[in-house]
Length: 107
Length: 117
Image 1 (tube, rainbow over the protein chains, first blue to last red):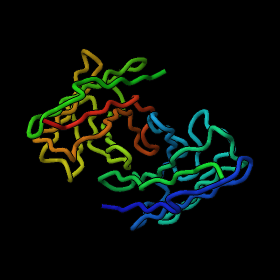
Image 2 (image 1 turned 120 degrees about the horizontal axis):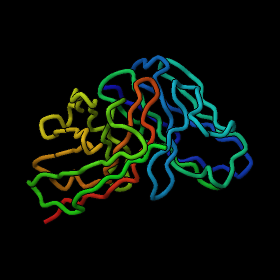
Image 3 (image 1 turned 90 degrees about the vertical axis):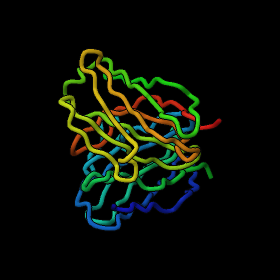
Image 4 (image 1 turned 180 degrees about the horizontal axis):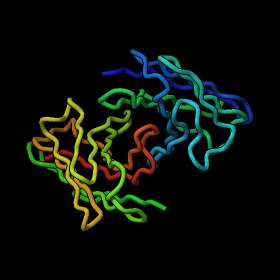
């Protein structure tokens, strides 16, 4: 099983600033990586797939990069609605696995 | 616009079988793959299984011995059964549409299942 490790666990950011979230895979997942956003009491929402392609309707301030074992989600100019928990997920190998999440909180 | 809705008992006794159904609207279930994912309270996400409308399935090895996923194309529904449940199976259970090559999208709102006597 591929283990996905996200860091940091919590990120404190001021509105309008940039947030940089990391995700590391225990072995290469090539570019088969997705990012999700989850707000309290809601289901996760797909943000990014293929490591860098934004899903339909996702604002341009969300960007993904990386390949192999190291990935980054960047959120530029954080808006109030962006404070949430973010998960990465690999779909290169079975079973599909998620990272433990990064909580982005207001500084 | 595809919408998914989970349904089933919110409370299950230890050692019994958890049964949930996901109803798909706005799309035919006879396409793509459909999946179950769970999230224990305050914790992360765990993929459980997927099914194709033809009945082809894939399970997480950690749960495979206890899980059955099935599809009813006439009702546009798919279902999850998890046997011999314990308190560790207490979680919000989500159903989602799964795209090979791009992940889970969209998700149902989720349903909390508590295992307790």
